[in-house]
Amino acid sequence: MNLINEVITHKVFGEGNIVNHEESIITIDFNEEIKKFVYPDAFRKFITLNDQSTAKTFKEIFLKMEK
Image: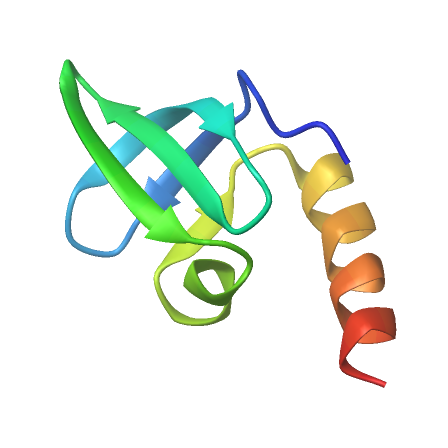
């Protein structure tokens, strides 16, 4: 799933934009402050996708990965 340019909300850093996604690292720009997170683990506790359609699709994929 291509997550680049998706808008997210982080529990501590607030709203940001995904600028890069490698295998296990996701890079987010929080108003010119760049942070890297472990993918997909960060979505479990810290990050949510703002687009509800993309978030729903992502949750379905994430559930399949857990099984």
